[in-house]
Image: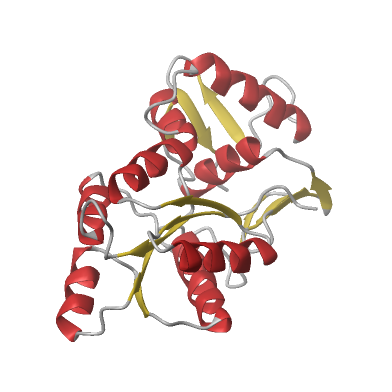
Length: 235
């Protein structure tokens, strides 16, 4: 089974809906983490760095709109899909204006939820990433990243990466040609509360480069900007 699965944070205080959404998503090969309050949801977002958030608005400690405000104020572009029983146009417009990507009214069906999740993840992958082909794949020389299937291959041969190695590679690919500092990569991959530092990043990068067949001095894919960070090569 592919370990590079999308991670989804579900913030919902109603246990039956939370369990229902979790079961649906896990049955479709997504990783799922959950929270039942806004404050805890913000903490889990920072520590787990999910690929997408499903958010209820009627939370016990704060309105879910506060979660959107907080995440967007941090310049985080992670897709946020609102799940709410509020059907008024004003509520929908406010959530969308604050930065929600979609608004799903309760009750919702399995097919609709999964379709909305797929669309949001697809749009997120394409956003600001001109190196993607029309079928959602990144190419650099003989390197191919299939974002939809979360698969990496070189010369047609699949490379088995850990979740962390895959996330580092995708982050570099999304910013092809730009130098990403050690601090930026650590924050994006492990979250701002991580205390592993540069050493953990360097170990993961060394393993990633080895699996990709990159030898010292080989700059076909990733360039090590010594003392600064890493950069994905341009064609």
